[in-house]
Amino acid sequence: MTRGIGWYVHHQGAGHFQRARAVAAALPRPCTLIGTLAGFDTRGLDVLDLPDDRPLGGSEFDGRDGEAERPEALHYAPLNHPGVRARMARIAEWVGRTDPALIVVDVSVEIALLARLLSVPTLVVRLAGTRTDRPHLDAFRSATRLLAPFPEALDGAGVPAWIRAKTHYAGFLGAPAQPAAPPGDDIVVVFGRGGAGGDLTALAAAAGAVPDRHWHVLGSVSGSGETPDNLHLHGWVDDVEARVAQAAVLVGGGGDGLVALAAGQAKRLICLPEERAYGEQTEKAAALETLGAAVVHHGWPKASAWPGLVQAGLDLDPSVIANLYRSRAIRDCAAQIEALARQIDHA
Image 1 (cartoon, rainbow, N blue to C red):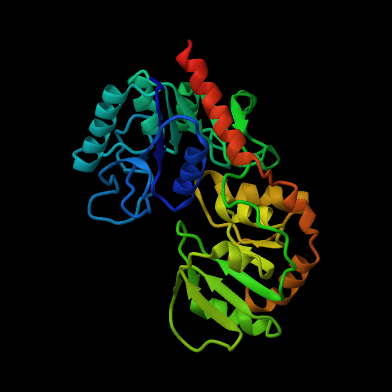
Image 2: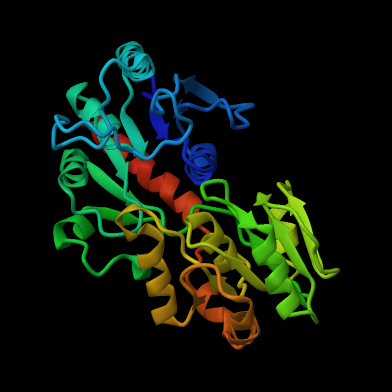
């Protein structure tokens, strides 16, 4: 019987789930998605749903528990948390029952170390940024192999050589490339599910500063007030790729999903990296800027800065960011995972 694969999915944002679903569909062996998945469309997928582990009494998950006595090898290990206790027990029961060949961990130091304690090989996803704190280093050492869901050209300059050598650079595992189409004149702004969303007043000021173009905003926007006629708020939509295809300029953060979307559609990108731990978005944005693949601005720009930013975006050569995209990335990643599983099967 072919041993299956487990894929742990972190529940912050949508990017972890999207790439897990895409690669799992290309695997030639069974794959179970593991995580707190209640907010995702899991129809047709084999899943192991876990209780939530967010801090008790709060809705936000920041990866830290504030415990001064927490072991240095861990990021998040709260005491007396029934959700944490139940999810670890459920994973251990699933491992004992199914005997997986491999667990892909995207992402959690604690799950990577739990898998090691359960004697299961891991492929640990390594996000962008310089993650040289002890918990990350211990998780990386515990892994059989590491997986970077971005091109090697966007890796941080401070990443140790042994981590690079252990890493398979899968490239973007996000939205598939779209057929080439002439861009329109619009500006499309995308706010992902992992960030704070947009501010209506700031968006209205930006659209007012560039009145000769229509601004289409996808994602969550807070606030109220008057808006210019060229500002269109669409909220959450199911056809993000089709709407982005009409953009002359794409505006958004430095998350893997949006950058992959820009690369797959060869879109001129104004990248506004959000603050994330370990410089995940800022370091990626810096690499994009160095390559000439995006215009980068830290923080939401003042209204007076938008005309110059839009013009700088229009002056970009879109082939630069397009060259970061590989159409076979998902299939090649699945092939790498299958090869690793076969190697483990015959060890």
